Every structure is written in C-alpha cells, then in structure tokens.
Image (cartoon, rainbow over all chains, first blue to last red):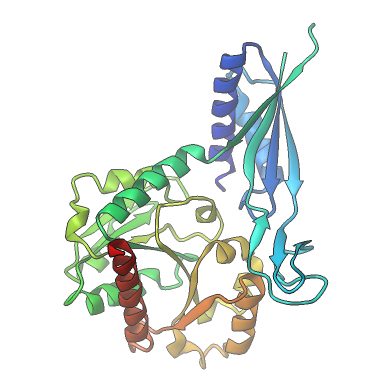
Length: 113
Length: 226
C-alpha cells in the first residue's frame, strides 16, 4: 500500500504548480496506466487524506485509466491488451513484450480557480 | 466565483524518485559497478539466495549488498556471513525501497572499490514495482512453495523485472510444484523473460547464475571502454 505516499507526491506537485500559476486548485487530472502498480480506488481515498490541511483540501482527483498497449512486431502495429495476465497480440497471438503504454503515473493538468 | 482554468502540467508523479535514480545510475556507471536489485514476496528466499551468490562471487569479485526491511538487522547479519560489506536499510513502515534510501545508505561508500552491488528490496510484490533504484538488473524471485500462479496474481512486478529466479527448487517435488505451468505463467506476463532455477540449500543453479552475473559485468565494462 504505497498509494498514500503517491497521493502526497501528487498534492505536493499540484501545490507547487498552483503557486507558480496563482490560484486555488479545484481538480488534478491524472493519467494512470494499468501497469503503474497503483490502484485507482486506493489512490482516490488516499488523495482525500493527503489533501487534508493543505491548500488542496476539497479538490478533486480526476483519474484517467490507460490500458496496456504493446507493440506487435509481426503486425507492425500497436495493440491494446485486455489483460495484464496475457502479453500477446490480440490479433495474431504473438508474444509481445514491448510495452508502449501502461506504466504512466502522470499529473497532466490542473484546474485552477 | 471565476471559471476554473485548465493548466497543463505533464509531470511524472515519481519524478523526484526518478531523478535520484538517474543520479545513482550515473554514479554506478562512472564507478563501473553492476547493480542488481531483488524483489519478491516475503519468505521466497531472497536473503538465502543472495547469501549464496555473495559467497560464490566473492573470491573473484568485489561484492556488496544493501538490504531493506521494515525492522530488524537480521538479514544484514545473515548476509554478512558471506564476508561481503553489507548495510541494512530499515524502512520503518514503508513497504518498499526508494532511490533516496539507497543514496543515503551509500553515503561514504567508494563505489569504485566494487564490481557488483546487490540491493535486496522489502519483501513485497506490489509496491516496489513503481520505484526505480538505478539498478542495471531487476530480479524477481518466486519460490516453488508459493504456487504456480504468482506471476498472474502480480503481473506488474513480473513485468517490471528483467530476470526471474525460481527458488527452493529442491522442494519442488515435495510440494508437487508444476514447473511447466509456472514457466508458462511467467512467459504470459513477461514474454521472453529469462528464468534461472536455483536452490540455496543444495546450490543447484547458483553457479550458473553467478556466471550470468559475471558475463553481464564483463559486458558492462566492455561497453564502458568502447
């Protein structure tokens, strides 16, 4: 359970950014890959805790979950996986170890008031 | 009340850790030291395996180890029996190692006096996956007593690792371990992953893995010269 420390990093990062832009953070937009090792639900509840007694108290965390996308060499195409348990191209069935998306844990934008 | 405005940020949440990890990686590179981290669930045999590896490598290689645990120095004491320099990192309540802890633990160490450095993470198959420690090679260990489906239950950590080590293979028969299924599960979550089968009790596979590390070290040094 490392979501609380991740949430605290998000709050810290958002505070710094908000200070540069001036204003109060109403929402933080986050991209969360399915292979990031972070669980969305745990992160959302941790975020509320991490915001307490900070200028971000009451702000929302908007999580966009990103599926795993691999590169399939035989198909020469990017393919979305439906599960992290099966790293094979859904079209041709070839094992596809090359992850092109899914590890993201990124603050993409802030809503500032 | 004013309308909220959207400000683009685009920053990795783990940037602070990644920056320290990058610094560490540069330090390791400059010192020509090959760094191996170990992750697994608690009790899968990381420490026993590492003690063996340190002992086997030590006559020819200058090896050292950092070991992370929530509490106690027991593992450092066990690893120190190999005569290699060992330092315990006590994480308190933290469930994983972060790059800054490695940096702190290495304060005062002359990395140039090392060939191989091992970093044993806290026993945990979830949290360590997100944290880069600046290592060259991440090992994920799985013991035959844990069940063949561990890779499917924890795909993220298996996917974040470079090489898998199947431990306690001397017990495989007793626990009716289905090796074929386990290997298939590893390949399902990490195609083409190399797997070593070892036993720290009867030394099976230990020499082979030590050879693998020596060759990785030689490759690192060859590319450093080139």
